[in-house]
Length: 91
Length: 134
Image 1 (cartoon, one colour):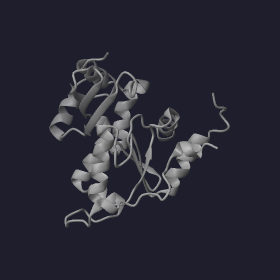
Image 2: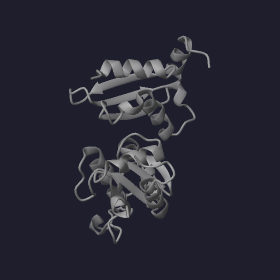
Image 3: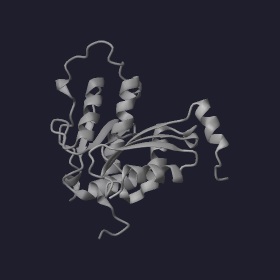
Image 4: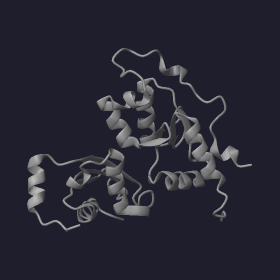
């Protein structure tokens, strides 16, 4: 049964430069709401942005993770600068 | 176990998506949604006044499996417009709030009160994918 913090860490580990806020909105460990900001979203449609996040969890979505409500955004310049100064894996 | 060559459920889903300009795969029906996410998506669609077809995925678990395999999207509901996946509850709700949904559906943003939405255009015959299995 994942916790909101685990979900957050997994998103941030899998998507370079991502910042996630995750809430377990029923407290039951299976319904989560995540707000994810990542430079990796730039130039991608909403569908593609959400897919990137869903892909972190694969078949767990619809299984142990019953719901993962998403809001995605590209960081503003200030946040992008902060992300750029953080070490990011080379591609 | 179905053989890889014949997949009547996936074929029926693909056919339904291509035959309906606006089609929502959901849990339950627009009149009686069986999940809060489906209910919110239906409400956003109805608020635009655009007609849409709806498929209940609950009668057969294989519908959901095949739909997600086809669309590469793990959750329900899923809205398709002109054969393309637009999104699930989060995206549709967000698009409704920004007015993009009405635009995508080819209707005026509901600045003026719409005619009663009661007369939702529903397919004459229920769009039951499970009914298409010979």
